[in-house]
Length: 515
Image 1 (cartoon, rainbow, N blue to C red):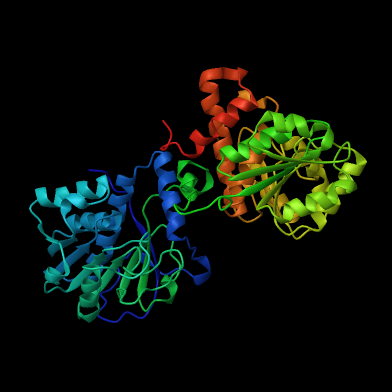
Image 2 (cartoon, rainbow, N blue to C red; image 1 turned 90 degrees about the vertical axis):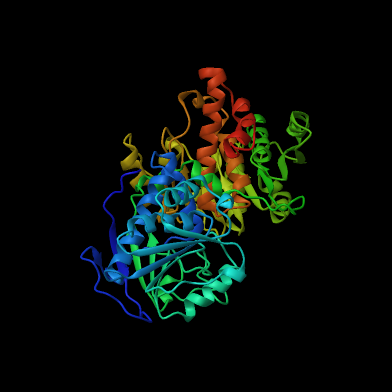
C-alpha cells in the first residue's frame, strides 16, 4: 500500500444544512483572496503531469481518499454509520480508499454498477481491497435496488469533475435519496452533478453539506451552501510548471468534424529563403491542421509547390514581403484560423514596414517568428500574438535573458507582461509566458541547433493555436517539437535535420495512437 503524505486542509465556510462536528486541528480557513481555483479538465492535466514526474496516480488516490476520511472523521461520532456511494471511476476509487480509513466506524459501501466494469485499474484495485478485507460492500446495478441504508454520514463519491450533464440512473435516484436524507452528506471533489469546468449544476445534483476537493478549489464550489475543504494530496508544484505528457490531453478532435474544423493555417514568409516556410507549413499539417496555405514571392512559388503537393501555395509579384503584398496577405489571413508570420522572410526595410502594417490591422491569432520578431515591440495591434524568439532574438526585442533557467523564467514573464503578448522563448529550457501564466518545457536535445527546427516549432504552434488557447498551444508546441527532436535523435544522433523533426511530430503529439 502506498504511504500517504500528511494531508493539509484549507476550508471555505458555507452554510451547511445539517449537523457539523468540530473541525479537526488541521482544518483552517484561509482569507478569501488566498484561495486559488482550477478546473476539472486542468486538474486532469496536472494529475497526468504528476504521474509523468514520478508521483503515481495510485499514490494520489491514496492521499485523496485519506483526506476524505479525515474530514469524515470530524463529522461523525464514535459508532456512527457511514455509507459510501461510489461510481466506477477514480472518484469512486477515492471513496473506496476513504472507506478503508473509516473502518473504526460502522462503514458500508455501494458501487454503482458491476465491479468488473470499474473503469480504471487503480480504482478496481481499491475495490478488490475492500472485498478482500471483508468490508460490507454491494453492487447497485439498476435503479430498482438504488436505495440508501440508514446512515449518519453519506459519502458521495459517485461522479467526479470529468462527468457533465444530467445524472443518469441509478445515480439520479441515489442523488434524490441523499437530498432527502437527514444524514450529513460529504461529496468527493465536487457534488455529483456539478460541472467541474464551469460550476454549472445539473437538475437533481447532490446537495452536499461538505465537499472535500483536491489540490485547489473548483469553479462553482464557492457558491454552494456547503463547507468546502481543500486538501493538499501531494501534487508537486512542478506538475503545473513543467510541460509534460499530461498537457497532451488538451488535444482533441470531434469524431464528426469536417475539413477546416481542425485548423486552416496561413504561412507568410520566404523571399530570401524558401525552406523555412516549407518546414513551417508541413509541420502545421503534421500537428493536425486540416489546411496549410503559404503566401510567398512568385519567384519561389514553384519551389514551394514542388516541395509538397499537400501545401496550397499562392504567390505575389515582388522579390520579398513588402507593402505590395499586403492586400493578398490580409485577404488570406481573414480566412485563416492562425497566421504564421516570419519564416524565411528577411530583413529588408520594405519587409519590416509591411510586417508592421500587417500586424497593426490584424485581430486574429498570429505566430510571429524569425526576422518578423524585432518589429513586434513597436507595433500597436489587437491581434493575439505568440512570439517564438530564441534568446538572441529576445534580447533584440528588448528582453533580458540568463543562463539560469529559473532567472530566465522570471525575466521572460516580466517581459511578456510588458509586451502584452505570449512569448515562447527557445532554449535548453523553453519558457512560455503570457505575463501571468508561465510554463517551462524541457524536451529537446543539442542536435536541434540545426537550422529549420525553429520553423518547425512555429508550424506546430500555428496548428495548435487554431484549436487551443494561445498559451496552451505554445506550451504543447514546445513540448511536442522537442519530443519530436528527441525521437529523431534516437535514430540520427546529432545528425538530425529539421525534416526529421517534422516527420516525428505526430508521434510526439499522439504517442499512444501511433505504432
